[in-house]
Image (cartoon, rainbow, N blue to C red; front, side, top):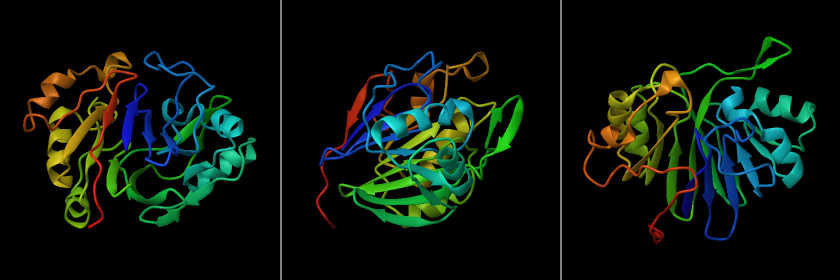
Length: 232
């Protein structure tokens, strides 16, 4: 399995069989993005409705005939605006897809999309546990550090946690370090920082808050290859 960072909170998950999942596809207007709307993917996961996470989900879904996976209200909105049939979920739910299993997790955050100057409710914010290739990836989404993350760490052998560190809208570096310890991930990839003036952070300083080698700081376009795991 390979993870590729595409700026802000956009993460590509490449599975061993060639399946490509894209999480939080904000490309147009993203000053960090290294990809364009010709990006090819098989499914699109969206943690919440804010434009800098969901911005290009409909266009990419249409161009790739790729289902959007997320909260019911968000998937319904996308379908009503031209996206092909997606897969609606809700908090705590789990579903077995052809490529693996996805479980939704709580995220302490809001979720709306501004349309014609008005916020449209897009369901609850969420995170994802992606279980495929005998690996588990925890995409926290935009969230604070909260106690139930400890339960994730006890229930799942998490290989990589993708955590926001920008502060102001999400948890900051110290809280994210605590969250990493709660979920007991082998590796951590920080996201959601330095895109805007009010989320400026130093990811290298964040890395010093956790054991050496645990934090993988990725620039847009950088990839992180997970070692193959054998079935338990």
